[in-house]
Length: 96
Image (cartoon, rainbow, N blue to C red; front, side):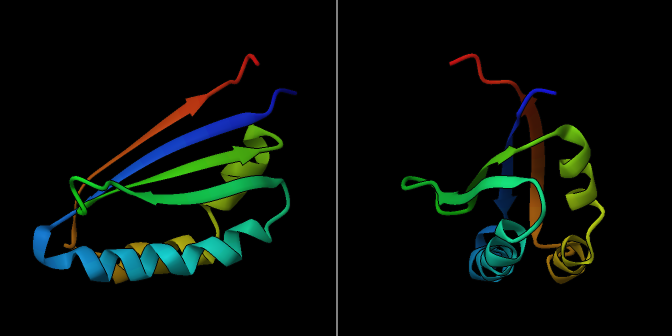
């Protein structure tokens, strides 16, 4: 089974940046402790502070899918309802 890399992009409404950032930061320590999580790093765009990116590496797609069903992600969605304008997710495989 190949390691899975996830690139997730979250765009907050301009007046909701700090709310979204706080909710995203709460996910970091909980997710890093999950089975199968190799790396889970949150980034904020220097030129557009409303744009956040997660760079994640998981042992397998199955363990990442378990993460996607975790209660803390449901809590994040509820906490940021109406504050996020766009969310995109890419599943990737590293070659080197």
